[in-house]
Length: 529
Image 1 (spheres, rainbow, N blue to C red):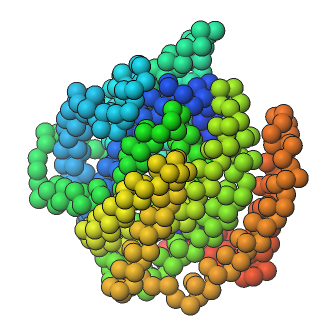
Image 2: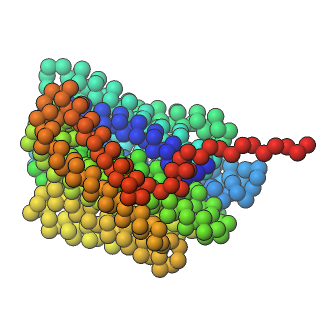
Image 3: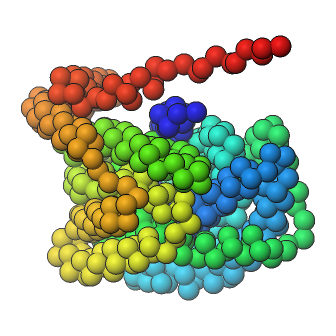
């Protein structure tokens, strides 16, 4: 299966999830606004969600998938791969249970480390601790989901793992609705926050049930047995430890950003997280899809010492990534006031909050191409079982990020914090590429550089058109629902048509990639008998 088709499958389902995620956050903004309960909820949601991305979908996946793929390739019967997966599951479950139990007991200390300034607001710190204890079991449930998803990815079955976030958003939308109903006319936002926390735990159970069914349907039957530290499990653990930091620099920076955001005026953390929703839309659709699809494919090429195909695969991934993220970043930056106002402002979310959120969006999307390219470059290390190099790169980037935040946050507030995140993400990806080139593992050739240059020209043309349209539509995206819908539709359509027309005229659209999109599956070979 081609990279383009895999990315299309994962990206399409991720886009569906992001749509429901948008609905979830639109409801959340209007029901809770940016205040005490919403800040406490955002912290309670950040803890298990960031650990999930850091350990389960980050470090665990990048270490487990290549080892499981290698076991599948070495044994046609699949017995070795099956035994390896069973052994990992047996240990993984107990580690998750132990970690979750310790974290729930230590939750007051964890919340204090991240949000000690919440103690200055009566009831805010205690609410954050209580909500975090309810939400944290989600980590254990969704971590097993991530393992099952990685296992299916190794079998080139990407759809189930890409679909499970849809279940999360559906259950949480139901939670917001239930909280709003239970709150009634009391205007007690705490009721909504508790309903959200419970819905997150229920969503984890729904995701696990679905992935267990999908795994069994795919013919992969796991057995839960007593834990044994086999040599393969031990090797996996040794790979996971450094990969936890290397694969999760973006997630670790979320903790750093949370720490600094909680020291700012009330509502700052909520505005940052909601602004990041717009940033996460293209990041999730393109970045996660590319990273998920490229890792097992790149691992196979490297195992067969096929350097030409490895180079071609990564070049295609870079080209796809920049083709989609450069215009997305520019469009979000130019149209941030329109998107934020139309999607989030209303109910308890004020226009002043929306204006600040728009500035945060502009700062965040400056690093969008870097966030995506990290997902392309890191698999080149992980597929070679080199998880140490990204650790040192990530450590340097994170240290610089903290140093910048210490300076900019007191002076420029939440927008300065978002800008620092974008800058250090760009520094991180530039360093990774430099190392890849020096080691001879990947390099930008003339053709790829030319394509990216044409993409940048096309993006600038699109940005100019959107910049001229924005003041003409200002009275509509701030008005009634119908005006918001058609004005945003005009912006999206104008941006897409302009970019792809410019890309076609400049040659930014690669005919080889378009051919892969149109390519049909080859016919089955005819049995000569």
